[in-house]
Amino acid sequence: MIAKKIFAKRKEATEKESILRAESRRPRLILARISVEPVSERLAMISGEALAAVPGATAIDAIVMASAAQRGDAVFTSDVEDLDRLRRHFPDVRVFRA
View 1 (cartoon, rainbow, N blue to C red):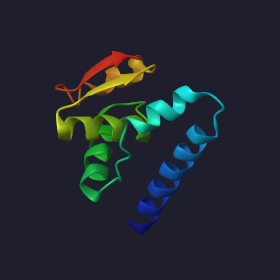
View 2 (cartoon, rainbow, N blue to C red):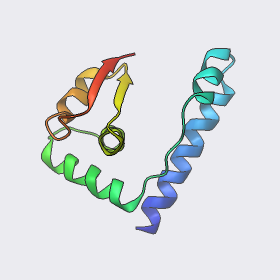
View 3 (cartoon, rainbow, N blue to C red):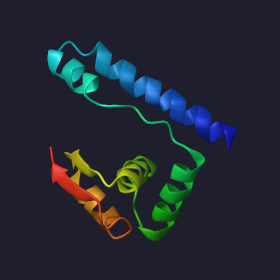
View 4 (cartoon, helix red, strand yellow):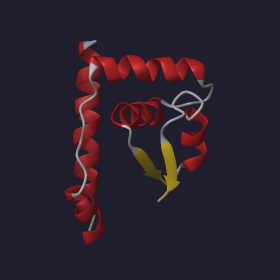
């Protein structure tokens, strides 16, 4: 359990660092408009259920969809096909091509 939280926090920091290192201004503008959400135990459990229910789904995609489902949000992504498969488990999440 603790290892999951450490991994999630490190991954979150790594993603943020890679965005900030980019030379373009666009990633900085995007990062300024999003919030980074920690992976709670509840979110991890919901994501795990989705992984078990949807063959071929990845952990990150399941976390994104579970997070959006909890808030009633939509997801904007370039990976529409993979997230669309997870809609079987999260039918209320709308997925749009970014």
